[in-house]
Each structure stands twice: as C-alpha cells, then as structure tokens.
Image (cartoon, rainbow, N blue to C red):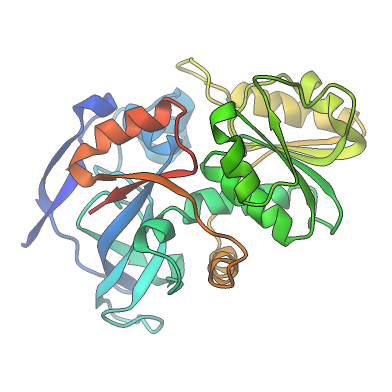
Length: 326
C-alpha cells in the first residue's frame, strides 16, 4: 500500500496536538476521483471537528466518543491523479475543486458529483478557498428567496471568509450592499464592491437610520432584538454562524431561538442549514470564471503548519480566507 503525508488524529484533541504523518494513500473507488491536492480551505468548522466541540457536533454524525474520520479538511483543489470505475466527468490531469473528506493530505478521494472544473482565471489557493464559504454565502443570500435587484442587503462580518463572498454575490445579484466589519477590514470590503461600509467599532448599524431587506450575520453574536431593529417589517435575517464559548451549544442557541420566534413575527428569522449542491458549485465556478466574484485569500500555510493556521483563524484576524498548501 502506498503512503502519503496527511494530518490525522484518532481522538478529539486540541489543534495544537495535530501533527503531519504518514497514512495509507486512498484508492479511487467506483464513481470516485483521486485528486492530487494542491490546496485546501480552512474554516472554523475544522476547529469544531478537531476538538469535538460543541458536543452537538459529535451528535451530528462526526462520532460521539472519537472521530469517525481520522483525516481533516473539506474544501479541496488540485489535479486529477486517477479515476475510478464509472467516472465520466473527469480525466487524469484535469484541474478541479470541490469538497471531500480529508483535504489536509497529499491525496484525497472525492465523489465526482462533489467536484467541478477549476476556473482557469484563479489559482488553486483561490479555488480551495471557495466551496464551503461560497456555499454559505450563496445559500444564506437565498434565505428569503432570490435576491431582487435593488434590495438592501446587510452583511455582518463582511471582511471574513463567508462575508467576502456574500458581498460580491449580493452585488452580482443587483443588491445595494452594506458591509459591517472592523476598522482593519474596511478598505477590503470597499474594494470588493460594498456600497457602504459600517465600522462596528465606531457606529451601530441598528441605530434606526436605515433598515434592510436581508441581513446576513456571518459570525457575530448580537442579540436577535438588536438585529431585528435593522430589518424592514417583512425583512429576512439569516444567521450563518456565531462563535461563543461553551461545550454544549456554543452559539447554536441563538439560531434555535431565531427559528422558534420566526412564526410569531412578521420578519423571517432563520439559521443557515448548509448543504452541498453540485448545481450551486457549478454556479459559483461560473460566477468566478466570469469575474463577478474573486475569492479573497488572506494568507497561506503549508500543511505541516495547520495548528498555526487554526490559531490565526480563531484569532479573528483573516481578511478573507486562510488556505493550506500541500
């Protein structure tokens, strides 16, 4: 059996305990593609799956007492190394990107319906930055139905991984976009097309001066009452994430409260239930290829420095995405 370098673990652990080692190299099965990984995207989900926190993550299918999958990483970009029986969409040498189980490795096996061709106008690093965060942005923007031209959209966390995609996609749909971010990210958010930028360290977007048809909260912890003050009477709030300390819910309680309250108010309050979609991935690839969206990569780390990359991400510093190179 051939081996490869990969980040693997047998138990839930601190990211600082992750190490690069040798594991068996996978073999493409029926309907699968073996990808030589060039880059892999990093997001907060990696921390959750590594640590097994909050405990609801374990109950969601990742393994109650220990991880079901030893390997980490989902967003992948690379070249097709081999194809399994029944694969008709790709051939050896094709450049692809998509999602898999075990992207933080030299090779990964991926179902062919979870891959699409990599746009020629972006790098492998940019391609790897795209799937998960762009899925979240796209599906979050659709939370209240298709974004209509002229709609007023507020993106909270506009300078982060999901936020940078959300701003650009909303503009591509013809919306009037306001981005909320910290001082260090205001120039970036303007540069990717936001019509207005709110520095949350200096002003409050819910001060009553303006209301929005759609608010996409990509990682704040503001109360529902605060967020609702900035919504139109029939507006939609989509909560994409939230990071708070806690071993059980860790931010998901806010999503649950939103869904419970929504039937009793005129506004639509919902939490994003992210799903993988070949149709959405093809759409995102086309949007990137047409230049309507450009993935923003803050910095890259080699595979052996995954713990350092996670620390940087968890510190809230990235302007856009952090990517692991292989």
